[in-house]
Length: 464
Image (cartoon, rainbow, N blue to C red):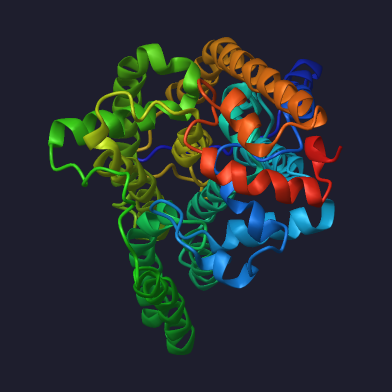
């Protein structure tokens, strides 16, 4: 039976306008709290893996080979270029910390505005974005500026999901061009980006086929060229590639892989949910299945296929990242997926799910007078964004607690290192006294080489 659909109009009541402002206020507060965290906890000194990068950052070894040098399973030319430029400009390891907060804050604000446009008005549930993206449960990323690699992945992959969400048959070439450029940048962020490339490249090729059928063969060839670029990059990536010596062989145990992948996916809500990760993963699996069913129903409409295919491709790519971590870390045993740093790698999945249900609740395509086939009622769709916001709010205290506890421990250790450096202790003595039973375990040899360079260049806590 045909049903007439009346497009949603923006709410005009004072109460609705006030509720629409709530997410912006929450965003501002969350941004200030995150900045306060990196200002208070952050130290102008290397953290963890950054000890290895000191010679390149200070010019003691050539920068160009370092940009391509393998680090664990990754080559990270784009993040390393950003970190190198920031450090050469500031001589401060905290610059990367501040940049991460700025990037995530800008992303949260943009998504708040986007959700309001899709819905026709702002809503308090859009607090989901700052609450889930700017909490101090990201401490492991925030205290190491080099983790801008994960922040870049999160921002670029979320941007890719937004492009997919807004793709139509009419703007297929423009969307495909933007998606192709984003895909190249995502590949440059590291091994995680490589996992996203194949399935999203297939979507861009799908757009190219649509453009070709519409008679624009030249534009279609451009899109196909853009899909080839990241594929060529993957081939170059594995030239002289080697497995990290201290890592176990990739796991072939499906249970181990599945467990670690599930842990990683649960981290989308933050490390605070780690004690109940299995429940969070189960809820995400149920929500993901429901979202996929809704999208597949939209597939019946030929005009919706470009967007539906893109959203499914991005979701598959992000899920593939979790599976890849499961393969790589499954041999270590359970719990290896419960690292706070993984949160940024899978958070785009939650953001995309939220936006899809906001758009479903608005009638998916407000420009049409008839609702799309298989759409749920707008009232039922509204509960998904609300549920995600409530879940993020419930996880927020635990995420904050994890961040504050670990941040305090790190700050205390750096205060001790600064005191030792000020007292004139040698690099060997500082490492022997302060690195055992700390977050710096495993970096001893790198720090012994780096500390004299930091002293000679008068950097941060070693300036005296």
